[in-house]
Length: 92
Ligand SMILES: Cc1cc2nc3c(=O)[nH]c(=O)nc-3n(C[C@H](O)[C@H](O)[C@H](O)COP(=O)(O)O)c2cc1C
Image (cartoon, rainbow, N blue to C red; front, side, top):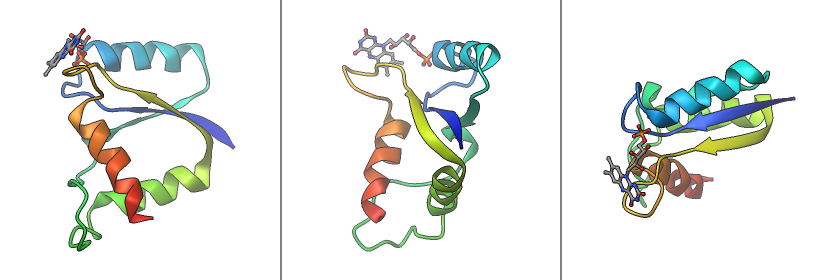
Protein backbone atom coordinates (compact mmCIF):
# COMPACT_ATOMS: atom_id res chain seq x y z
CA UNK A 1 0.00 0.00 0.00
CA UNK A 2 1.19 3.47 -0.82
CA UNK A 3 0.64 7.12 -0.01
CA UNK A 4 -0.84 9.63 -2.40
CA UNK A 5 -1.09 13.39 -2.32
CA UNK A 6 -4.35 14.61 -3.84
CA UNK A 7 -4.08 18.16 -5.15
CA UNK A 8 -7.02 20.46 -5.78
CA UNK A 9 -6.13 23.94 -7.00
CA UNK A 10 -7.52 26.22 -9.70
CA UNK A 11 -4.15 26.42 -11.42
CA UNK A 12 -1.64 23.76 -12.38
CA UNK A 13 1.36 26.09 -12.26
CA UNK A 14 0.57 27.62 -8.87
CA UNK A 15 1.71 27.39 -5.27
CA UNK A 16 -0.16 24.25 -4.22
CA UNK A 17 1.01 22.15 -7.17
CA UNK A 18 4.57 23.43 -6.68
CA UNK A 19 4.50 22.40 -3.00
CA UNK A 20 3.00 19.02 -3.86
CA UNK A 21 5.65 18.40 -6.52
CA UNK A 22 8.36 19.25 -4.02
CA UNK A 23 6.91 16.74 -1.53
CA UNK A 24 6.74 14.08 -4.24
CA UNK A 25 10.41 14.63 -5.03
CA UNK A 26 11.34 14.15 -1.38
CA UNK A 27 9.15 11.08 -0.80
CA UNK A 28 7.82 8.07 -2.67
CA UNK A 29 4.28 9.46 -2.66
CA UNK A 30 2.19 9.41 -5.82
CA UNK A 31 0.35 12.54 -6.93
CA UNK A 32 -3.20 12.89 -8.18
CA UNK A 33 -4.16 16.28 -9.60
CA UNK A 34 -7.94 16.63 -9.51
CA UNK A 35 -7.76 18.91 -12.56
CA UNK A 36 -6.90 15.82 -14.62
CA UNK A 37 -10.37 14.40 -13.99
CA UNK A 38 -13.84 15.49 -14.98
CA UNK A 39 -16.41 15.28 -12.19
CA UNK A 40 -19.26 17.51 -11.16
CA UNK A 41 -20.73 18.54 -7.83
CA UNK A 42 -22.79 16.20 -5.69
CA UNK A 43 -26.15 15.33 -7.20
CA UNK A 44 -28.87 13.78 -5.01
CA UNK A 45 -30.21 12.01 -8.12
CA UNK A 46 -26.78 10.60 -9.05
CA UNK A 47 -27.12 11.67 -12.68
CA UNK A 48 -23.35 12.16 -12.74
CA UNK A 49 -22.48 8.60 -11.65
CA UNK A 50 -20.70 7.94 -14.95
CA UNK A 51 -18.25 10.82 -14.69
CA UNK A 52 -14.65 10.25 -13.52
CA UNK A 53 -15.32 10.41 -9.78
CA UNK A 54 -16.30 6.82 -8.93
CA UNK A 55 -13.52 5.37 -11.12
CA UNK A 56 -10.99 7.67 -9.47
CA UNK A 57 -12.15 6.79 -5.95
CA UNK A 58 -12.11 3.07 -6.74
CA UNK A 59 -8.47 3.41 -7.81
CA UNK A 60 -7.57 5.46 -4.73
CA UNK A 61 -9.18 2.95 -2.35
CA UNK A 62 -7.52 -0.02 -4.07
CA UNK A 63 -4.01 1.45 -4.31
CA UNK A 64 -3.49 3.69 -1.29
CA UNK A 65 -3.72 3.47 2.48
CA UNK A 66 -2.78 7.09 3.24
CA UNK A 67 -4.27 10.12 1.54
CA UNK A 68 -2.71 13.59 1.87
CA UNK A 69 -4.87 16.48 0.68
CA UNK A 70 -3.32 19.66 -0.71
CA UNK A 71 -5.53 22.68 -1.26
CA UNK A 72 -4.98 26.41 -1.36
CA UNK A 73 -7.07 28.58 0.97
CA UNK A 74 -9.79 30.13 -1.15
CA UNK A 75 -12.12 32.41 0.81
CA UNK A 76 -11.15 30.93 4.19
CA UNK A 77 -11.86 27.41 3.04
CA UNK A 78 -10.65 24.63 0.75
CA UNK A 79 -10.69 25.12 -3.02
CA UNK A 80 -13.89 24.54 -4.95
CA UNK A 81 -12.66 21.40 -6.68
CA UNK A 82 -11.52 19.90 -3.36
CA UNK A 83 -14.91 20.69 -1.79
CA UNK A 84 -16.64 18.91 -4.67
CA UNK A 85 -14.27 15.97 -4.20
CA UNK A 86 -15.30 15.71 -0.52
CA UNK A 87 -18.99 16.25 -1.23
CA UNK A 88 -18.95 13.38 -3.72
CA UNK A 89 -17.84 10.96 -0.98
CA UNK A 90 -21.54 11.05 -0.11
CA UNK A 91 -22.06 8.88 -3.21
CA UNK A 92 -20.68 5.97 -1.20
C1 LIG B 1 -10.34 32.67 -5.18
C2 LIG B 1 -9.23 32.90 -4.16
C3 LIG B 1 -9.54 33.05 -2.83
C4 LIG B 1 -8.53 33.23 -1.88
N1 LIG B 1 -8.87 33.33 -0.55
C5 LIG B 1 -7.90 33.46 0.38
C6 LIG B 1 -8.22 33.53 1.77
O1 LIG B 1 -9.37 33.47 2.16
N2 LIG B 1 -7.21 33.65 2.66
C7 LIG B 1 -5.90 33.74 2.27
O2 LIG B 1 -5.02 33.87 3.13
N3 LIG B 1 -5.57 33.65 0.94
C8 LIG B 1 -6.53 33.50 0.01
N4 LIG B 1 -6.19 33.42 -1.33
C9 LIG B 1 -4.77 33.38 -1.70
C10 LIG B 1 -4.34 31.93 -1.98
O3 LIG B 1 -4.64 31.08 -0.88
C11 LIG B 1 -2.83 31.86 -2.21
O4 LIG B 1 -2.44 32.78 -3.22
C12 LIG B 1 -2.41 30.47 -2.60
O5 LIG B 1 -1.01 30.32 -2.47
C13 LIG B 1 -2.85 30.13 -4.02
O6 LIG B 1 -2.56 28.78 -4.32
P1 LIG B 1 -2.64 28.24 -5.83
O7 LIG B 1 -1.49 28.86 -6.58
O8 LIG B 1 -2.55 26.75 -5.74
O9 LIG B 1 -3.96 28.71 -6.37
C14 LIG B 1 -7.18 33.27 -2.29
C15 LIG B 1 -6.87 33.14 -3.66
C16 LIG B 1 -7.88 32.96 -4.58
C17 LIG B 1 -7.53 32.82 -6.06
